[in-house]
Image 1 (tube, rainbow, N blue to C red):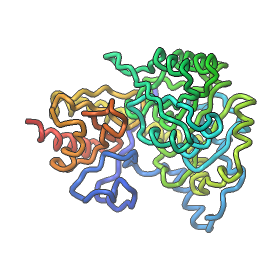
Image 2: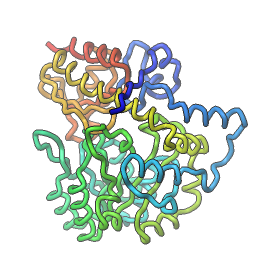
Image 3: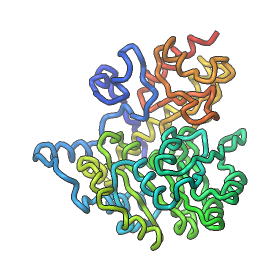
Image 4: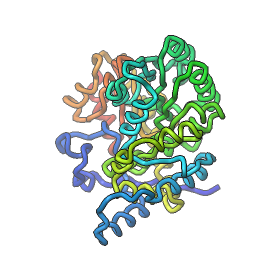
Length: 386
């Protein structure tokens, strides 16, 4: 069995030289564990590809076929065992922009779109941006994890909802939906003439002990009713470079994506495309594995730290990603404990209510950092426990 050495996060003094939101929103006395940026050095293949582009002045418009589709198809085959036709892929600026454009074409103004809170905060915004209306069908807490409420989803579809905006893997809980669950969701969508748009941006960060099922690969029905939107931005920390992919697996859905205006594809950033090709290449697999090893250690470390310093906190180790969903309601810190934590402990975590009312009393913690930073952050939070 191959031994994987975990990736080491950069030191704080070096990270604070970055100009991204994570490092500029708050002062240097605050440990920033809120926004979904990671603290690791960039994958060598990406760094080299971008350095070549800068050195040659390659800063113009993105070409029609920058190689991202072929690179992603190879990545999906290697990492997920999923065969993707590169001809059924188009790029755009980012995942949420892709979601808006797809929703505009599969719903009419005023149609209802199902989301599953607690869920990624922009889901609440992109649905109305597309002219539709949010219909919340919260996840079910089983006591051991979270699952889609398929009964509730069916009721909403039967009552006229026209689409499901799925988060797979789920943000913030880190839930990886099972193949059976996804196949059942697809059957429901087809039965009621609805569409599923699956945000799969966290898929490359699925833990080694879990199995990610792409929605379009869950069943032949899923291939017919679904669209997947993917990006290298979360796994490889590329959010500022702007490149997302819209993936289809059926003639009708592929035709809809092909008919999108060229301007949607023009919004792809050239550096985003260049970096995505490098990220999805085999040369970056070892780096990704090393990052997964580091995240695996941190997600378990966080459980230990919370148990020691924040008794009463409820946290389930996630199946994917570098984001932890932590229930602090028993501490009596109100609906939005993140405010108290930032003000009094000088740790920035993301506000639970941003994820819907189901997030009241919760926070989301980014553990894509060094063990030392994570340890200090939880110790600071623990100092507030009376």
